[in-house]
Image (cartoon, rainbow, N blue to C red; front, side, top):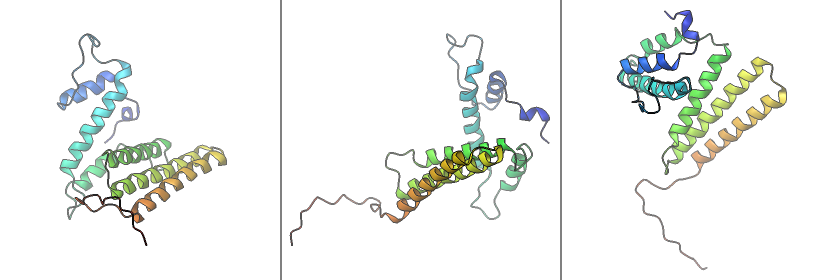
Length: 181
């Protein structure tokens, strides 16, 4: 199903056309972009396309339903484009997705201990995937161990978030009291 050209990075113009077709293209400033998107806009446009794709996927595939509505087709389409499991690009993709998830889990200023633990666990998983990718590229043991150490710290932070009791939802803060014996 995937064409060989799917492995090449898309140009900014191609990304903009795709976003325009999906009704999600950002409106360029005519003063700054009189000729349309520039090559330097590619990362921004990829981010918009990624968000649009993931939002559409969330509407069409609900993993909590039994059977998971649309999830099988979504994963089949995804796997038809993604490189083989041992491919370095695939591992980098998995790591980036987990890092995005970690950031999104903790975006709220007052994120709950569960959200913080989820974010830290996602960072730990990303670090372990990075260590596996580095191992496959022949990185030095020191580099791999540094990555594993960072993953271990994230996993420990996740565990601490889970065992540290947080305030009850909607609970009023307790006043500072000095108790004498």
